[in-house]
Image (tube, rainbow, N blue to C red; front, side, top):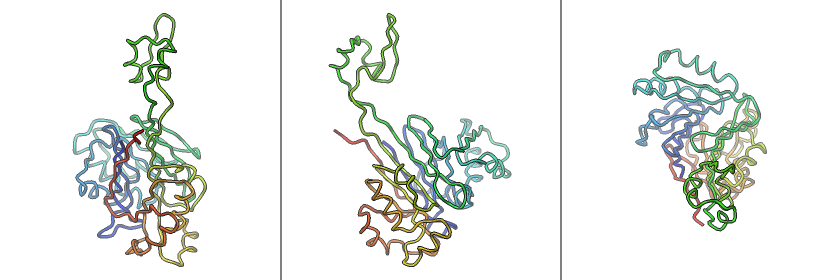
Length: 303
């Protein structure tokens, strides 16, 4: 299962009741943070979560409202005597940006490994899940991210016997082992049925609606998407600054056939985004107008 917490939902500047956009996801004892705007540490503490399991930080882009919380978070991790390495992923220039922000945190007891994304899409295998980055359309280089947790097929004893797999190997192969014996290699696919549906979360902010978004969010269990503007008459402003309206986000969720969409990254001028919920739900009924700290647990389907 994948635990998900949308720590903050604000864009541009934090408000007293709205931290800047940041997402924390936890799987198998490891945490991944996507974006780290001002107030991210407070948002984590407010939800009773912990910093220690954060192994990966991903940045969608390098505007201040998405990166300004990083120096303080690094200092907190350092003061907690963390020694495990930290991976930071982001668009081209991520190492330069991180090193610049580290001017106030120059000495840390752990290593930072920066990974630059230069391609339109890139995939990473991390701690048992798959992280996929895809380029979107903002006024600077910007990426969305999908987290996938694959799920192997069920054990099929008939298939195992047909493939002449010794019973003594069944348990080890189910756990992913590869066994060589008497010149023959035995693998997990020799004893398992078809791969089952896994878990999928897609997150994107700061972009115009482009096909890459709904294609990457296709059949997602949860689609978290920017909704900068909900008020009527903001369409031209969304185009000018390369953001999205609630209704454009809802159209993407509909095209993607997502199970559920959470809106985030609201403009500071959008004081009561919930006022526009009914209109958005006419396009995509399972839309949630998110607030700070919205949480859920995504679980495998039982079949």
